[in-house]
Length: 254
Length: 206
Image (cartoon, rainbow over all chains, first blue to last red; front, side, top):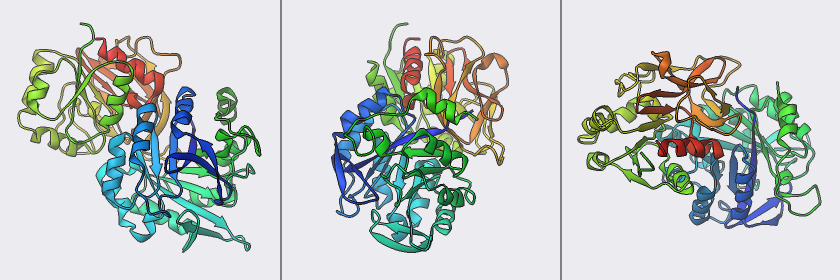
């Protein structure tokens, strides 16, 4: 049977690897190429790269870095950030990335999701939803790296993205991101229960227990790890790492 | 036969960059080729593929002389060919995904995964393979060989002797097949770490 995918989700700003807390200011982690070499050695399931400033800075994806990443990695790769048209998506796929992550562009041009899906297959499109829980407990969707509120409910938007042809959803809790407090399992479940495509939980992972919660309670199909795989511990220095395989498999075994 | 250059058939569908990268990592020369003349010189052929069955078959048949040269190379000269993912499905007689006949090199069909609440389609992620017949492709793989899969259709060979490895997704389906010099792998070796590296190396050393 399939293993639950545990995916390091790495944030880029152009050619640097960074990490944010709750979508705020970012801290510098290091050189992405050295980092992916380590993840390649660790034989992780999959890697996701998000250039979190490409859209805001109106930049194209950094193709030079993506080329270098693809040359180092022998696992499935996804990339998001600054992709506005199908041609850019096609270029990234041709480098050796399997999946394109679309967030902001889906609001301005929902047909882009369908266009990439019909050309390269639904499995090559991950639609990303950034969700913030407001003071009244309502889940609001944001685009532009969490800076622009979109007037659509998270569950409604998830269903729409599936209908448009997305093959997976990357669902990020903006409140939990970088906090090590665990995934927002209620929010994840509300989405996982209404879509048929895999949901990748993101935002808040701090332990293997949290991963289990996202799968069992949040009904997610896969999990993304951020701070946990680039820092030693919360509040401590940079250390590229991955949870112990044996512990992971024991926890996730059905 | 030693290590020959691998000719990768580029018919416009599939992620060739990763395949070239992995062969480069294991020190094997490749040549990406989109015409019959190039395939005519091949010593070993890799048939990639991601996408829909009919789109793939019609693109291959649209390349002038491609079908004829493939038949000549693999059926007459009997050089090794490895189809991966959709490329493996193309080796069968046909697919439920489309109307066009397949290459028909290995008797069998390609079938849609049943829809169920438990198991999502596509079958996507890392799964184990189990060798059911000894064969050169899955020989000496590292322990608990796992590979990265993405597919909504699976292959069922007619002759059990052509079934080399199976994978379980609710039931066992054929994940590695072989008939003489013709091989197929349902997963993506180029995305499967040391397991894929070993399998591609095995193919290169045939």
